[in-house]
Image (tube, rainbow, N blue to C red; front, side, top):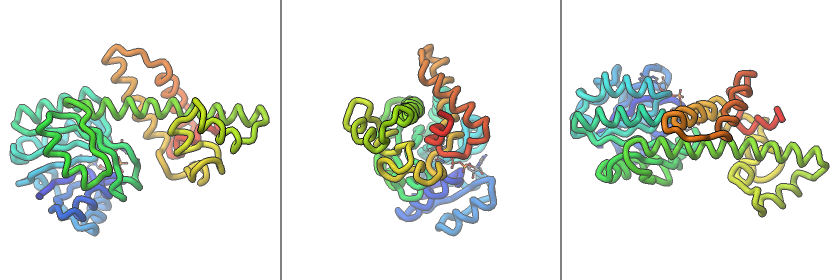
Length: 289
Ligand code: NAD
């Protein structure tokens, strides 16, 4: 299938390479020359504008930094330039309202469009093991599933347009809050004289268990290998967690939902990032406790 791919950064670069491996003809565009050169090395053909890349495309996939850029790329250069039969898939993490607005503009021009944000970081993008949460019509989902399956291990229909973004930010709001709670518990356990491995052995089998503890333990040397064992480098940067928490707070304000724990997690990650730790793995917040 002829697939245009817009945004070949840390995530998009690996995803586009997996589409090539699956036998697709990938037409790539990015503002960065370096990103385009890497895409070329992985077998994509490269173009000098979005409009050129989407010409004659059967599908368009995007992996861009934020909602403002996604809206501008789709409304200025994709809609009205890609064939109206082309399926549009935005995999970026953006706010729910923008995802719905862009989805509506695409539908008005005759496109099926899905929002399909991902769970999983740069390694999962390169390894083709992302989880996609998909918002859109049933027909759009059926068309999107095989394309997304070439880049991931799970593709789940979350509901109508915007539902993929809603699922993503609700999930990551749990993650931000549970990571901080887990960090606090390990810091307190240490001060109370508990051996941290012993505390892990107990809590990981008791009601305090969570993904933050058993898959990504913030205490070094405890649980499976995680960024804590690597000086809190690699993994999921605190700045990206903060981005997702801000999106969750915007969505909560727009929907009139009360999210006091999410709001506190946002404040703590804001302070952590402002202190120069934006590039540190988000579990590194334990160092402040
Ligand atoms: P990145 O900054 O590495 O890549 C974004 C790319 O988009 C860059 O190469 C940039 O040059 C390009 N770009 C920007 N504006 C453009 C435009 N107008 N036209 C074409 N290209 C343009 O970011 P990333 O880490 O790959 O993240 C991409 C998206 O994935 C974000 O929405 C992010 O929140 C989400 N995400 C990232 C991770 C992660 O671990 N990095 C995990 C899950 C989701």
